[in-house]
Figure 1 (cartoon, rainbow, N blue to C red):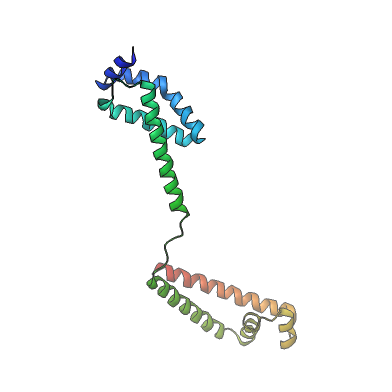
Figure 2: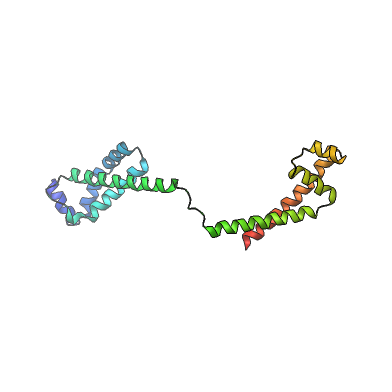
Length: 183
């Protein structure tokens, strides 16, 4: 069938002609786009969209055009569109997340103050020696050895007090965080 007859039959909506065109040009279009983009995804998308466009716009086809020129013109325009869309998507994904609003900052500040207040309260409720060990370690940044010497304790006893204090605080913080997020 000549190009003129092929395009005329395609314009009339002959599915067998479209099928023949698809089988003849599918791999050619795919490998053409793959050679330009080196992306199997874009090559496959372009190929599919090219033939969808060919079918959807068949009524506007010009009988004087060469079929292969027409198909590759559609493919080129399509893969350029896809590349633009991919570039826009990449730029969007690389953007910073939107800045927090003043109300979000305020809520975080309130939650942080509330949490610190609760931690301070729990530390004050600890047995006196555990509280003293914790305060020396966390607020005055003393080593376990320095704390042991200052309080006349063994390093193991200091480690034990810190372990108990930290475990208790961890459990409390987990509980408070659960309450905060379940509100």
